[in-house]
Image (cartoon, rainbow, N blue to C red; front, side, top):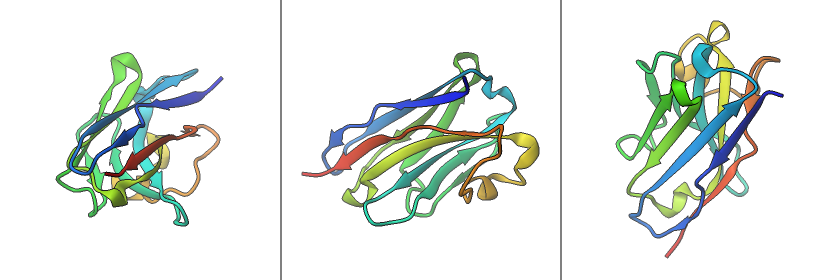
Length: 132
């Protein structure tokens, strides 16, 4: 069964840090571009950070540049999102996504995905709340 499972969501104070993890099972991430999306209450889901299969190319939403870092460990079949200097507007459900590299033009397009192909996958989401 192809599955992505996120973990690491929590309640954190403004200015704090959090690291999310997402582990894949049922498939290997070696041939997949990856990304982190988030959905705040009442808003559409948006891509915040994406990375190519080799870990060489990235794309970040303007709202998180300089504060969030996406990374991957293909040996562990896991992707990460390090979030620093968190702000209340970072609150939301965070989802990881994987799409086959042959179906992605570039990382900006990866972070603009609204759905995946039959070989792609979305996680179930993990809640991040930034509040004093």
